[in-house]
Image 1 (cartoon, rainbow, N blue to C red):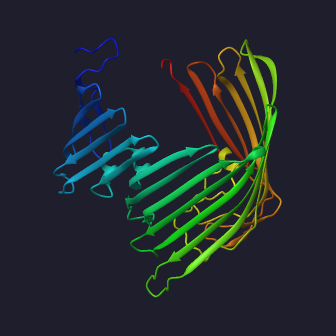
Image 2 (cartoon, rainbow, N blue to C red):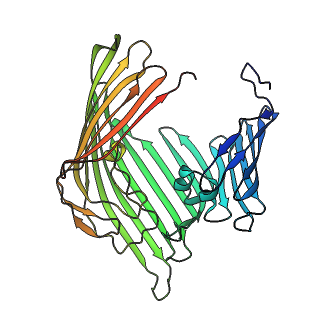
Amino acid sequence: MDFPLDGRRKSGLLSPVFKSGSNGGELAISYYWNLAPNYDATITPHYNSRHGTMLGAEFRYLEPDYSGKIFTEQLPHDSTTGGSRYARNATHRQTPAPGLTFGYDYNYVSDDNYFKDFGDRLAIASNVNLDREAWLNYGFGWDGGNATAGLRMQRYQTLQDPTTPTIPPYARLPQLTFAANQSLPDGFSANLQTELTRFSHPTLQNGDRFVAYPSVTWSFDRSWGFIRPKVGVHYTQYQLDNFGEVQGKNLSRTLPIFSTDSGLYFERDTSFLGQDHVQTLEPRLYYVNIPRQDQNQLPNFDSAENDFNFGQLFNENRFSGSDRINGANQLTAAVTTRFLNTENGPERLRLMVGQRYYFDKNDITLSGSQVTRQQSSSDLLTSIGGDLTQSMRLEGLYQYNQELSKTERYNMRFNYSPDA
């Protein structure tokens, strides 16, 4: 056995991996092939006592303006199913010219049970919709402004569980996007977000969607705080195809959106863990007003309800995508305190608490129907985090439902990284 002492790469066998479980015992021995400083390969024979012998291979490449990898696993004859089984993955990123980028991400497996037989719990949970997409983006700027234009083609391979079948997501074939912003005098800025998408599905109604969201923001930023009111209009236009006996039709939705984000910064010198620190106190208020509008006649191509977290507390819309926009007359109040090391600047400790208050209980469900919210406020969120030392980091979140007087969710993560 030999190995480099100075961190250089070297061809040779890697540590073997042994797994045992209901899918049989498995032994994998990988050989790492150091082909060149900017590309390499890893070849991995697997033996599974239940399914047979599999061969895996990964090739990686890295150049100044492009990079990517190609990966595959091949099992020519599965002893259990009698057929051929395989997985394929390829990614590529490239910048052929300043401001221009393109790439693709391709994932495919031979059958619905591939990750159940050859993966782990994480692979099973995260690989339900395998993404296959290619994109082209171009960004450019001018005096006081910039813009980005994009083209994307995307569809999925959806792995089905016979006991709980799922509906595959819509394919975007294609999606065109354009976003721009322009600085204006006296702290004002104009923003525009547009999108034109063709949604395709094998069993659901197809259609086109056009979205335009122009807005104007005024930013008053100082060392002691900020206030950023914003007003905009979100316009959505649909052209739906014929679907069986359902006739195609044109639909639209126009919603004005007003929001104001504001905060203050306070600082003081203090001592923490025996060292000099600066402690901050950062109260923040975020107000949103969007009139409620019934949307159950509109299709749902790509909207879902976002996870409830601190990022969502300061967001206009609790839905992702553009098909659903919540009604809102609400205020988020939060406060953050940080302990910053004065010697080298790391955030040693961060404590946050926040909650959203509803002045109007009218809202929209994911189906698009109008609903009356029962609670006058959201769950209470608290979090803790920071670099306790140079090698130890702590992150935690606690969500409490005051209406039911119960804990909804909590998590804690501790990372220890002794070296870079």
